[in-house]
Image 1 (cartoon, rainbow, N blue to C red):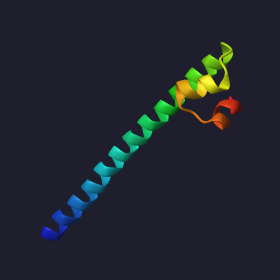
Image 2 (image 1 turned 120 degrees about the horizontal axis):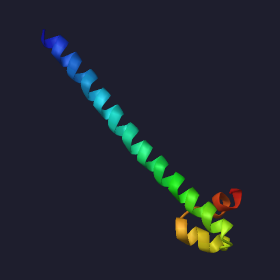
Image 3 (image 1 turned 90 degrees about the horizontal axis):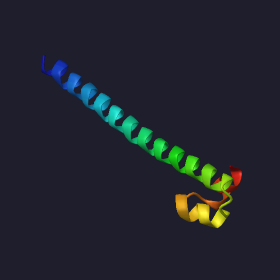
Length: 66
């Protein structure tokens, strides 16, 4: 019975850690997508690449690919 409880706790902990990691990754992806949307709008408004970099924190290469 103790072995069962120990194993269950290990599995539950791993599952919870996986859920937390997934949430963190999702938030990071959302932030990047938001920066890309802002960069696209700024580019369509005619802002310079340097200004877009300052505004979004994206790299020059990332901005130029948009």
